[in-house]
Image (cartoon, rainbow, N blue to C red; front, side, top):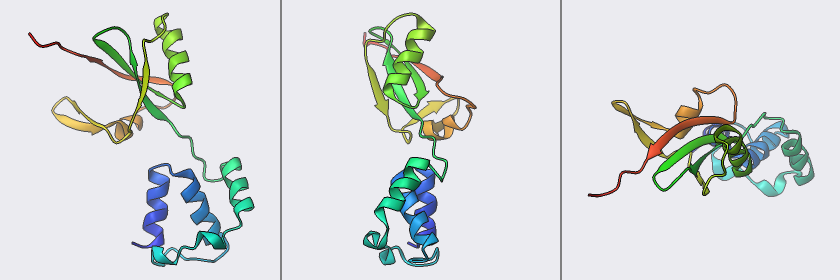
Length: 143
């Protein structure tokens, strides 16, 4: 794998620290986009500078996760939010009750929608602002 592919993957999968380290090493010309990833040596990075890049979010990351909040014994709502706390706050304001629990799911989790399958990561692209309700799930018991 070359540095360019890893860099693009780190951005796509919102691996902020990795992306900022690669960005820094590219800026300092310690590596190039066409190098094999085996050439990446994080010890060559100025860790203080990378910390500042991350704090200043120079790559513009806005991490949004997906959270399942339990409404009652059988009903759940999925909410895109910056954090579990934000998802709970949004749920409480929207539904005027406190959720029974809140669990983060992987953005790569796939679910059936219509005649196809979609991941939460792809679904997130359909929303312009966050927090937002992604959908509902009803658990059907066995009879």
